[in-house]
Image 1: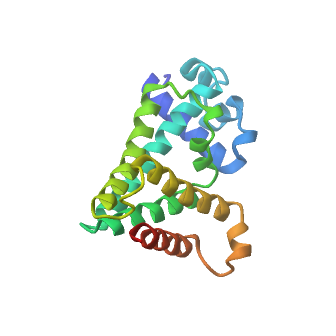
Image 2: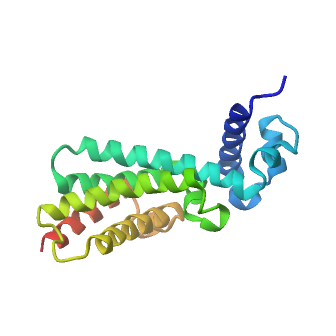
Length: 197
């Protein structure tokens, strides 16, 4: 008995995630994903049409999980707006570290269909958490003289850059003994001081 389309879609996205985590993005093929999922090699093409369609579904999942992580971090910081923003930065770096190669899918737009409504909604949800965090901090006077969108891009650039340094092993060379979480806390703390100045 064949899997219902919805279930098959989920199984294929699971298989794609496992394949990316194990082999890296560059080595992943639809045939390998089908083999891992235990379905015919034509199944991914029938469900997603092509590799970009499957990576779009995977990126949607990962963006949704990133949004969950950011929302949890923000909520855990309570009513302190600066702490909420810092917590989001730390959560972003931690998420990138934990998800490894799978995280790379969301920062490689050439892999997916940017106009996909599900992916667009998941991305918007993740960025909205960051934007609310920046807005909340700015409402308390932090970086008050800086355009909100610019400040958001600055914050994302800093934490994403740190996540990349940690993932690529550069952080271990330049900051031996420090974890990505430790450095993320130092950087977000410094950003809070700079914004308040």
